[in-house]
Length: 318
Image 1 (cartoon, rainbow, N blue to C red):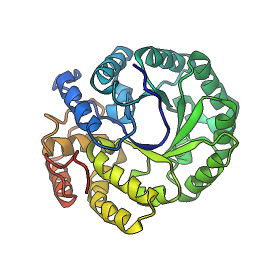
Image 2 (cartoon, one colour):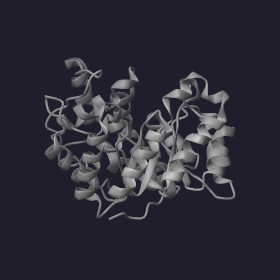
Image 3 (cartoon, rainbow, N blue to C red):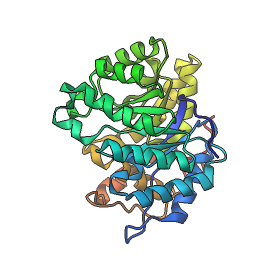
Image 4 (cartoon, rainbow, N blue to C red):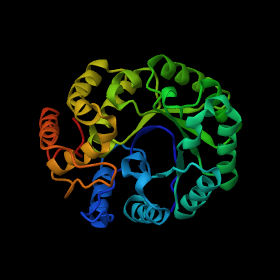
């Protein structure tokens, strides 16, 4: 059953547990979905994205992930399905499969091809989204990367995508530039068909939300969704004191998850859930590797500093 998707609020991107042999830990994933899905106030969940190590998953595994997700939470929450592929025709095929399986929206990653000069060829980005649009009527969230990565869309290109592709409803903003972020919030909101901005600037989330974001879509929601909901609600209510108090609790997790090297962020989130007793093991697929004991201990200290425990991690924040 496909539930209607609204591009707003707190949308956790779910982790994907693996067994020691690198197969998907299906019972563990079901438990994780139930944990995240139980958080009061979230508006959707995302799968087959960065947090679920989609780059290492086959199409068959992505379909199985979606099947399990729909079985566990699909009757209660809209499901956002990642579209991760360099080829536009392959991305369109993933989109069709996601729609057939009941996805409520798509999170479209940039093609890796764009890193070799795509910013100079905006028609390539537009063509990529048109190909996906022709395959499905599902709402699209555009994943905006940092421009320095070579995968980010110049603001002018982003505006064209949002105006010319009628199913684009939001961006997931990871531009990692405060000035550009604010510009995108202002200009996307001002379009004749208003486009929502979902922040994924989890290392400076309070600042990002205060700029006027409509919500957030982040892998950190796999661990701290309840804190994210509390922060988002406080900002929406204009209660800066309450927002700062929640941000103070989130702050220790920021370093634990997002300190260099950035590529270990979801690896670290798995270790956090192991420490909190909500995941059996923190196996990751290569080229990711097991963290050092010193870093795992640092993550444990951060969870303690944030006041998280097995009983409270997914509980409503007072």
